[in-house]
Length: 223
Image 1 (cartoon, rainbow, N blue to C red):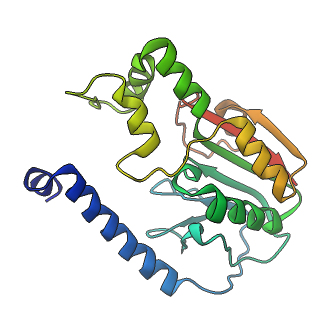
Image 2: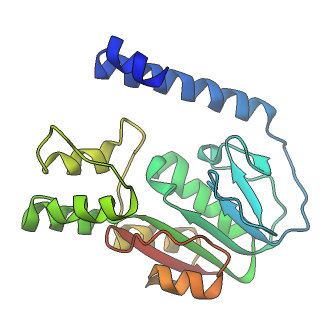
């Protein structure tokens, strides 16, 4: 069905249909979301997709332990509850001003004292440097090691930068460490440090490997 639609519609029409379908799912998710939610789980994964973690509370818009649209900037959990919150390659789908900063504020509220927040997202600085130095050829090669069969054909390698910034209208912003640090400091996190995937996996080995350090920035913030 997906390929049939692509063959019948222009790219703009196809992306518009995808966006409308997504907005319907978002509306439904917001309508059904609980105003408050108590859990005995102390580890929270935001934007889990199909990567559900055992003994964690896995949250996404659909198909999760608790379906939430985190773009509302509101979380239905008690304050000072979680020991850790992890979100991998999710924040780039949110607008900074009215979605992400409110969400980070809520994460700070929901974390217990000493609780950790781990974030990964495409690194704007790495993406831009790759474009300047290599016309993004190295970024394409890195993605192909993780997504077999993926390519940009028939487009030139420079188009990769457009894909990273827009991803068929799914991405809202790209960030670097300094931007994430600024937002996290703004909502109350004093200790914000740059880490890598190995640090995350050493602390929480149950998290599936992504092997995406080449394109990503990893950040750890402590309440």
